[in-house]
Image (tube, rainbow, N blue to C red; front, top):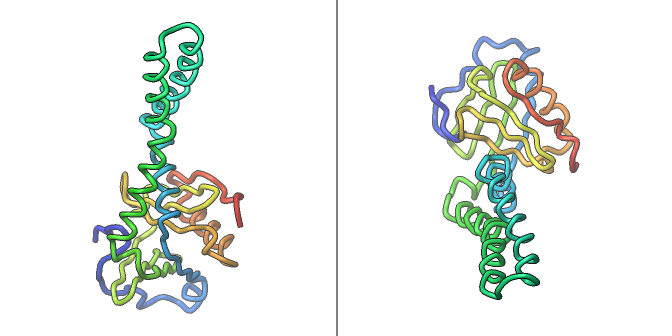
Length: 193
């Protein structure tokens, strides 16, 4: 089954599992806020080539703006100030507004999502819906200072704010590191607790 954004309904496949396997389950519940979505969007924006270009253009325009203040016309200074504003100030504000709108308009973010990390997969449950994400379908896992991102596709990710993992934080990170080790795992989660 193709797992889409952690939601969907399929039958639970835990039949035939040993008690030892069931005992190794780690269950956490998270709620995605606008702040969490904003951090996710900022991470993606500013770790991509587009984001890096925005930063370079913004910083270059800032330097040119100060140069133009003393050596060129006022119009050139204003144009450089606008470029700086668009690249460095407006972009994050726009991302925050987009994140807030997305969380507000998507009812999937209005209820907690429960993740159960098992030896054979990750079960994702929200209300009556649940799905399973086998470890071999995870393409990469990234730990930032604020969240764990578990990808099962190029842009499809499950967001787990580290602050909401509580005492299970280290166990979850260790399980992801163990199960996704042959694929891409980045970060340590040594940021905020």
